[in-house]
Length: 128
Image 1 (cartoon, helix red, strand yellow):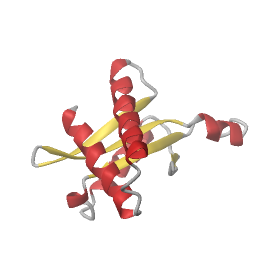
Image 2 (cartoon, one colour):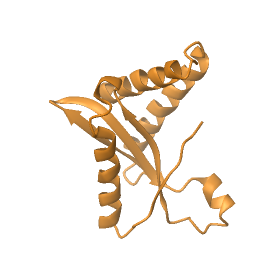
Image 3 (tube, rainbow, N blue to C red):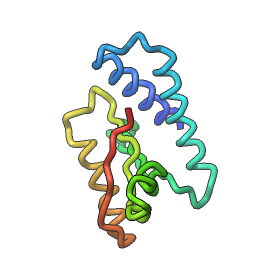
């Protein structure tokens, strides 16, 4: 789990820095803590609504993606029409491994996993 936490820490900090927001320490730490707690919560429940896939390169965790049922906001906005749609929540790849197809492979793994469950549509959304 520490390896995934490290991915969260590195990629979230890098994303904020890339946007010129590296001085937003409190917001950065809250986002990191939120992702770590989401992971912990998903592992604590046998039938969690959120799950994570990880990507490894030569034994090192270099990326992660989370997936779960459609969020409450989306259900409300669509009068529950998208209730059975899966939602990619977060995709993180360590900066030094970006641009090598790892993120694409993680998304493809989610799509294939859901297709095996009979769910053909996957919703991607960006949380700001």
